[in-house]
Amino acid sequence: MKGVSFLLLWVSVVDLSTQYRYDNVTVDYVPRQLTEFKNEHPRPIGVLTTIAGAPVDIRQTVTLNTDIFSNMYHLDTTTHTDSERIPERVVHAKGNGAYGYFEVTHDVSKYTCADVFNGIGKKTPFFGRFSTAIQNKGGNELAREIKGLAIKLYTKEGNLDLLNLHLPVYFYRDPVDFGHFVRSFRRNPKTNIFDFTMTWDFITQKPDFLHAMLWQMSDYGIPYGYRRMDIFPIHTYEVTNKHGESHYVRFNFRTEQGLANLTNAQAQAIASQDPDYFTRDIYNAIANKNYPSWRLDMDVMTLKQATHLDYNPFDVTRLWKKGTYHTVTIGRLVVNKNTDNQFRDMEQVAFNPANLVPGIPGPVDIMFRARRFAYRDTHKHRLGPNHDNIEINFPIYRKTYTRDGKPPVRENMRDAPNYYPNTFHGQEPIIDMSYPKIRKNMFDRNSVDLQPSSEFYNHIVESDAHRQRLADNTAFTLRNVDRRIVKTTLKMLSLVDQDLGHRVAASYKAAQERENAAAKLDTKKRYEPLARCINLFTQGRLKWVD
Image (cartoon, rainbow, N blue to C red; front, side):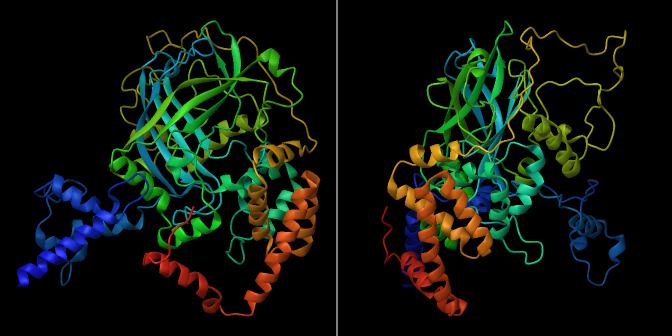
């Protein structure tokens, strides 16, 4: 009888595990990782050693009543634990890494001679890092903020890094704004709480930020996981063909899973049960061989076209206007392998938008020029001056006169000459026939232009219902903001469009009334209705309605 009871219990557990599903995923592999490892390794994987490789006697794994300072296993464990962390990234601190490949599907040799984009059927390996922009390493992935996918393509001509965001426009175009932008969207230095008074105060002083902020407040602000978002490298890139002829392009990675987003309520419901949902979802999709993929398109214009426009095509805070470019497809990006060690790969990977290859000399805008320096500087701080020697960052081929310094140094170019030029057969430079023949300088405006924000509100936001959700999301962030800042914000929104200003003002007033009523309740009573809804949902007594 006991055997029958155990069998019934085992069957019920199996049944529960098969019912626990994510969209397009049949098995949740995350909690099974250790079990999978044991299945792959029926016996222990080897003998435990000290860091220096000496076998550890089982009596050394206990230090009670012993000379702990003679126990190297204890010293290894304790002293290394004290220093096993490295500085977390200032932005995009929380992330998850995976491997994949890029496959060329169309001929684009007319525009660029970059080897990675030429040769239909060619596959190039890459490592990608999915991330949230503002959250700390332990933050909530379902917060309304920018998500990213940075990719490092290991091409025959060097590493090509493309740092992508899930929104097609960026917040600022003046690099001096970076530090202030980050701080204004982070925690108040005294309260240690995210403070929208700081955010909106800054935006009203820098109206260029408003366009991207409207995207973030819209339905596009919270994607339905990393797999369901489009991604954009933001900048306008110069590309050259084998004759040195230039074109200007914007790269667009379009999700092949179908673009999908979450409402505030949906995101809050998922976050209450699984704040790591984005990471879990992408991990499970790959583990179940439901490999996420994106189609890479390229919007193209010539230099002549770029100089005869009524807008700046190099401005990262705005979209290109329809009718001023044409679009071609390059290939597919496929993510097909989870990393087996997050710290080794995801924390030590160092992306730098300045990592370019022949045929892609890169953007000419001032912000990109600043990023060429800033990323190198932050990697030196986090990982050291030889961060490109770390395995995840090392290119397929490299010979350089840069050597020595703090480890890792790898082979350190062995006994080759360490200066250039030399007559002793050290490595020599090439002549790149695709290198641009003209040096370009781009001068930007200083005036404020709200036209891109107006275009977004009136033409990209496709319905009144969507406009209302945008207004409600914006008003929600204004609830506890200083009244003076609220007044300035509403005036700025009205300059974008009167309807936008009216909608946000009305929603703000209603939100204030709800906030005032809720303030009379203690925290437990205030959130009791939401707690009941979540409880009913987890019990299966409340159905999700799209």
